Length: 208
Image 1 (cartoon, one colour):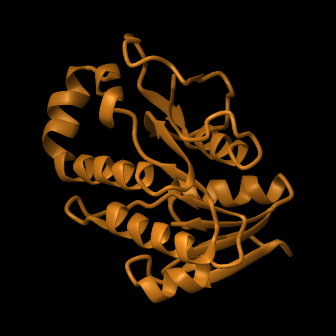
Image 2 (tube, rainbow, N blue to C red):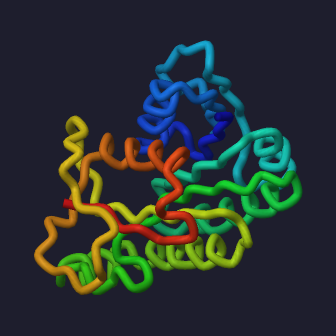
Image 3 (cartoon, rainbow, N blue to C red):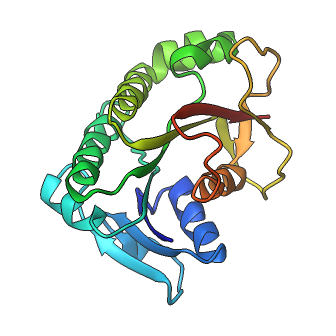
């Protein structure tokens, strides 16, 4: 499968690129500076561009079988997730690419109920308020896109190897989660969505 990862040099994106290559896919890594990736593979294409530039995104998306969005930003005020995702959606609609896998966050929309006091009031209710709202807008755009989408909502990122022991597709009523998951597990789950359509047109939460 020909896959493009939007936000390929981030902590999740870079791991997703590697795992998708390991799974045998042809991968295009799209970011402002894709040369930052420390990956060499004949199936890897590095493509520099700005996700907030529609022309760049249109050219990048065309010709792929699937698009994976792993956008992130060090800024706590940038709307890059929603603005970039909207550009990707428009590009996919123009070029006829239908499969979209978008990384969001646990806590968005109905999964808010899974969070504890710290995440509800201190993080998403305070420090990361703007980032959280951007994720929620991003999800609404994806759901309204008319594409064959899957939204992935991971808990807080941790380092370390993939465990494969995390919970997935759990109810918003589930309590007592650790609200953490390794970046490698997230990347593996994103990779799985390329060939497993069990969560098509669904937002799925994953966390320990």
